[in-house]
Image: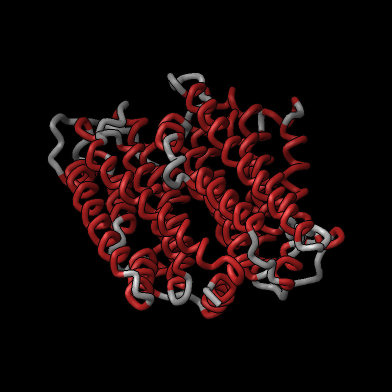
Length: 476
């Protein structure tokens, strides 16, 4: 029942946020709902799995519990950031009557993705996150944000259209095999769908469509523009929350169809992953836009995740550690990039310098976030990446291993060349900034604490949860 509250609670609150008397306190309502959702998410995550709800359409398993445990706290941190921004910049409050209802629907649909046990419900919930996010990308003072929102909606619609077409192919596969079509994930996993042309085509289309939502090549071009034009809080939600909601759908597909279609999943995911790392590496070299650089790094991370998921085996644990770490990294970096842009008035990395002197908190967050982004120890991203590389060698994928190492090295050098002068270089002109308060930095402090903890010490209950999910996506 608690999992149902995680879906219906934010949806009901979104209706209340539109009421005229509540609208002036919309950000307070947002923080309260986000806080209670985080508490309930932890109750669900670390309690024994209960029975399925609503006739089996909702079911909490290890995958649901793991992703609930970090997506909701990230949403809470972003909501505190929004509350503080509105409190310190009152003119932003004019947009909250539109912003808060949409973002609460976004949370409701994201939680629905995590606890759904039916392919069509997963698809519908992911579509609702897209429709809720599209208006959030548009910001009156940002030129080009309307076009970015349109491109996001267009590419997402194409990607989710491919997913729906793939689901229909799976239904046709069941009919061809003389079985009644079923989209319940637990039943699909239990009966091990046989490989045939329709199921092969269906799974291939679903993976390609979800790759669009994840920003994987070849359908990645919407992501840098969208992340650049959207407000920082929205970019953090897209990169850290919606990305992982789409990834959960992909995990469900892998869990259900890997026994019959392991070869297809490995080939498609590894190919898309390497292509994504390739285009992101060259894009990072070419760009001088701070937010787009982080966006291209997100594409690179998506490529690493696709390769790890495609290989399976011992890569699975490292992949999930990498996924969780990556969510907090993106939340830190996108919120920090928004703070830096607000002060310097530009995203041009050549115009930003002396961050450690001018904006000490933001300089530290950007520095540590970049170290984690590049996969340096002691962060969880380092150990996750190391386990994926080890699995590549162990499974004999030496070409993929070699290409992976070359592309990661290119990304490391290009990112460091661009970002580190922004942090350590001497300021070219004296600047005086308003003092940063604890509340403005508190979400990023929390994210940074979790990020470091994932690399230093993982509590046994969290480690067990990661192991359970890893076992469900390994090649069997």
